[in-house]
Amino acid sequence: MLFVNTVWSHGDLDHHIKQLDRQLLYNEDSQQLLLERGRLHFENGQFEKAKTDFEKLLQAHHDNSEALFYLAQAHLRLHNLEQAEIIANHFLAHVSSNTAIAKGAAVLSDIYAAKGYNIIALYQYSRVLHLRNTPLPDHFLRTALIAQESGANGKNLALAILNQGIKRIGPTVVLMQQALALEIELKAYNKAINRLNSMLKTAKGFRISVLLEQKARVFALKGDITTAHSEFLQAFKTIELLPPAKQQLAPVKELQKRIVEKINSFTTN
Image (tube, rainbow, N blue to C red; front, top):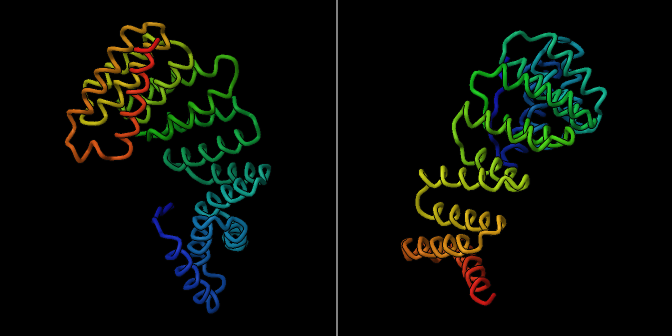
């Protein structure tokens, strides 16, 4: 089972699909050609056409696991949730490797989330994290997102999942930023400040300015206006230390403008 993930541009996709159309005129039942064209239709957002190719392939090759995998996802994109669930479970019944089972569990999780069954979706994504030797940041993000919708304690659960991801695969920017956002939402300001201090230890260049500005905003939310003012000033100084060309970049100028506005607001109040 290959699960090839080739990246095509939109024009390349159309070109390759037309090539496969011509080849299938002479070999209309080719398992390989139908699988490849269905996968390209899927990547091109043509889910109905993808579904048709995978279904035709499976008429002759009932247990083609890659076709089952993509067909389940095509039904999901088409909001055929009951059919998507049946096919995803059929896929899982025909695979044995942890990697393949994790792929199937991820699809099932998305199906259950689309149905509004967040607890079951969360269970399926916990299987993904357990089965994969090296989960990706996106796996933890997706699990945390589902956890947030799982009940009254969802945000705390989501934060615990993100922290688990940080412990397991390291403090990636995307996991740390999402955890920080949740701590701020939960008004856990001291934890948010500690996280920002940790992120600042390895930050460089403009990233330092961004984190200092975020830290200043957390202090402001906490009600510590004096420290917030000091952190905004420090953020402004780090921007002035950037190379002149860097200071002219739009994101840098926008941040500088926001910082100046906050500093001025403290001065006038």
